Length: 331
Ligand code: SF4
Image (tube, rainbow, N blue to C red; front, side, top):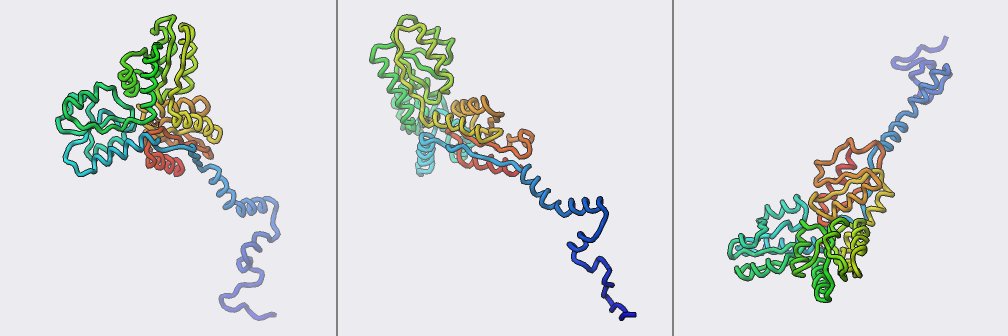
C-alpha cells in the first residue's frame, strides 16, 4: 500500500488537480467534445462578432466651415470682443447654422433684418451672403458703421451680374429667390430675371441675348435643365458659372463618400442651401439623414457593422461634426 495522501493534496487521478487544458483534452464522448471546443472558442468568437457589429465612421475629405464663413465668424467675433460699447447687429444669420449662431448670440450678437430698425450708434454686420446697395445707403444715412463680411466669391457673382447688365444682355440670375445672396445680386445689378427652376424660364422674354449668373451655392445637378429651358427661348445664352468651387468640391466629395459608406449623415443647418444640396447628392445613392445636432441622430437608422459616412455643409462648425462622429462610433 502506498503512502496516504497528505492533507490538502489530491489523489493523482483527481481531475481537478490537472491544468484546465488537460481536463479539456481527457478522453470524452463526441458530444462533450463539441461543447468543450465551442466553449474554448467562445471568447474569440464573441469578440469577433462584437467587432463586426460595431459601427464605423468615415468622414468626407472636406468638412467644417469654408473660408468665407471662417473669415466672417472671425470678423464678427473680433467686433464682439473689441471692448467697444457699441452693440453689434447682424442683418441675418452669420452662418446658416442655429447652434453656431446661438453661440454668437450668447456673446452679444443680435439679428435685425431691417437696417431701418437698427438703433443709432450700432455696428451693422453684412453677412457673408452680401446685401444690396440699398442696405449700405441706409446705414450711411443713419450713421451706422458697417462691418462687411461679404464673401469674395459672392462679390464675384455680384460683379458678374453688373458686367452682364453693362454688356447689354438680359440678365438672368439662377438661384433661390428667398436667399439673401440672390437679393443682393439682383440689387447690385438693379435689374434681372430670377429663374430658380426650368419652369421659371418662361418668365424670361423670348428672342433675347441672355447673360446668366448662378447663385454661389446653387446645386450643380439642377443647372443643366434650367440652361436648356433658357436656350430654347433665347437668341443666345452666355453663361457665367459663378458657383462656389468650395461647394462644388463638397458635392463631388459627397459622391466619393457614398462609395465608402453604407449610410450617410450630413451635418448642417436646415436653412443652409449648400447643406441641403449635399444631402440631396448623397441621398441619390445611399440612405441619407440630414441633422443639425447630435441629439437628432437615431441608433435605429443603422444596422450592425455598417459604415457611416459623415459629411457637413460649409457653415457647420468642426465641433458639431466631431460630436456627431463620436456619437455614431459610440452606438
Ligand atoms: S460657400 Fe463659398 S461662397 Fe459661400 S461663404 Fe463659403 S466660400 Fe463663400
